[in-house]
Structures are given as C-alpha cells and as structure tokens.
Image (cartoon, rainbow, N blue to C red; front, side):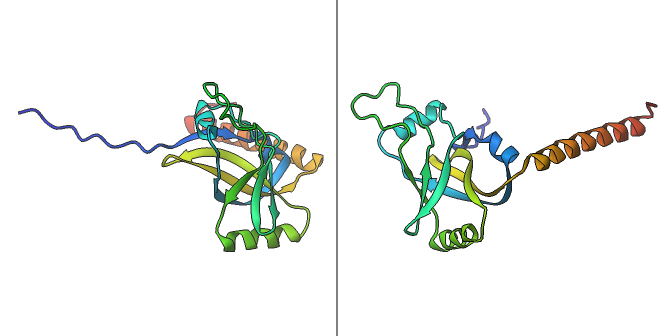
Length: 165
C-alpha cells in the first residue's frame, strides 16, 4: 500500500520590493501593515516584480492615508486597460491607526515611508514606517558602530576557536 504524502499548502507570500535606502536615511520609529487599493492590471504588474518604492511616501489627507510616487510599470500584456504608473493609491488602515499616525506626524519632523511591498495570502500589503530623518553625522556614526560590532564578533569567534590574532 502506497503512503499518501501530506503536502502543505504554501501560502502566497513573497516580498515584491523593499526600500533599502529608507533605513539608511531615516530612523524608523514604528511600523504598520497596510493594504493597498489597486486598479485593473496593477496586481498583475506587481506580480511581474518591477515595482519601485524609491521616491514613494505617504500622506494623511482628510482622515485617509494616501501613497504617492510609487512606480508600478504598465502590465506588459495589457492594452487600453493599463493603469497610470505613478498613480496616487489609497492605503487601508483602521481608524484608530490613522488617528494615532496623524497625532505622531503632528508632533514634528516625521514622515511616513513605505519600507516593503509584499503579497500576503494573495493580497498586496505595504509595510509603512514612521521615520525621522538622519543627519550625515548620524549616518557616519551608524556605519562606524556596525563596523565595530562586526570586528568584535569576528574577534570573539576567533577567541572561541582558539585562533590567535
């Protein structure tokens, strides 16, 4: 008798785009997961994986969160039903999340930055971060700290292995 193999159904999860420069230019204070309202061929174009979050940012207008300057190229097999690439898209958050975001943005020099775009159970989700801009000396300090931590970890590894430097 043959054994039946139990195959686990893989969830439709995958990172489509990340904004790596955001963590370099901003100190991320808090993050949220938001859904995106898409039109027509936008989800098909997203699945092709050519989306760009480089110049994107989010704003709160009249109690709604809007994503601006995210570039989703036109769908390659689309025709007259294609979407405009840099359309302003609405983000889906709970009312209490929007209110807390608005309060934090009112406090001062903070902005909403998209950190990553991914698929979760077949739906497009955006990781949105509340960021505060870094100065040049902050960036240099972070690079120096990262280098020092790497050297300490390397030296500790050598010590545990019994290798003398």
